[in-house]
Image (cartoon, rainbow, N blue to C red; front, side, top):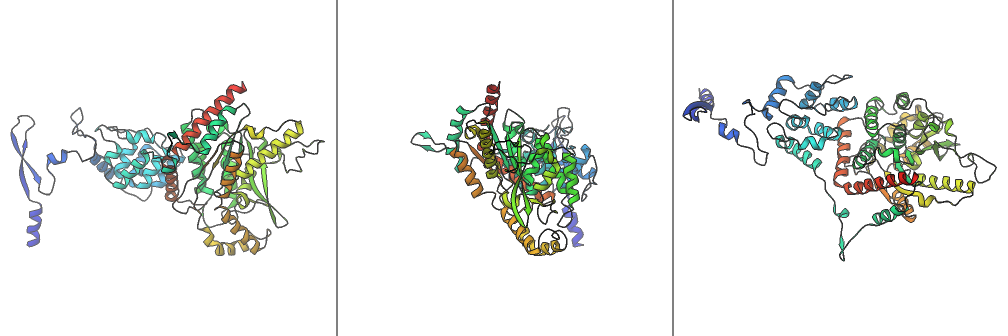
Length: 557
């Protein structure tokens, strides 16, 4: 009986006086005591944008509540939408509503994201995501949709932006982090004795502007790092977005890459744009990084052949490419550069292509070059006697600039001309894949036992291969530090501006990571690095590159 009374008390209704819309007189209406009054419901939330109570035609507005009800009615929560070769607009909306990150990523790789979606009340994808999506889905949409900034600031028919509709503090925080550009203290301009202080690189850059000629060179170095190559692509996308003379890669003259950096170098040099390159890498993680290590090498080779066909390295006329790989001979390792150019032998003793290991680019299939530079020990089988270039040079900056000067010196001696190579380097750009080391080293004993009976047989003894793997893992940690410092000093000593970009990742990301959540969060941290740490460096570089490209074009004509 007590429980019944309690129920009746809770469900008790009272009469509330509500003004009549037509006569102005009061009329009786019933409402639950536990529900807010109608007038209270119409009050705008504190800190939100102004909300309209009805549309111009008298219909109820397409509100946040309607988005929720519509979603719950049409899209009952499921673990995942079935994988498909194509996703419709409704499929993507459902994925947003139920937090299906895998479908969002796959829809992006299939170019099925309806980036221009707008419903009957002008709600875009971010209005829907703000109400119902998970943090990872919101991050993915912000990263993948080109005009995401504009869409996050856009108001719907009720004058609400996605930020206004987001009641979850974590979602609001994501939107605000994405929209804010901050300048850290170490990049602030410091007033010193009345003058604006500029760092050494900016001073060198400004002086270099007067020396730009038609022969000026833009050099780009890309680190290894497996799936973390997505970070490098994202940084280049941000740089290109700030530039006027696009695409960025068509203006690169010399480039060096190791492992994943080598694959990205080849993809871009084969006239794939940065967006296509990112799609290729998101596809790679699902097609190749499957099962236990070592992975099926045939799947990697199929992927490389699919994107690079059977063309030769020499078919790429520009830019000049130097890929780092490691050649095993008599149990010794040495760095080997695979190039798309060649020094022809002549009677001159100073110019011997074979002596300086300049293979003819006609002898190298592009996909085989990519396979050699990325033959990571215990991840994939060696390619003949070639292993991943990261064993010796995960950051190829020093090797690229050394190669450039050696090539230029040999050519100058051959032609009996003055070597002007140091004056012709307009800028050197080094891009990393993240500063955090993976935890794979802890798994070495188990992996080594597996390799002892599988991949290592016929290559080197078990103990020697274990040392190779340890060296490889340590090399992943030295992409920064001395390699960057030495390249920086070298560039500044010849009056060349030097830029180094690599995000600081808060968590360990394996080079073969295939979790959508981990990869999206890695890309999100890279986006925060771009927006909060290096925005002004990127802007400075973009303006300078536009200047270089325009002046090269003028002086070449």
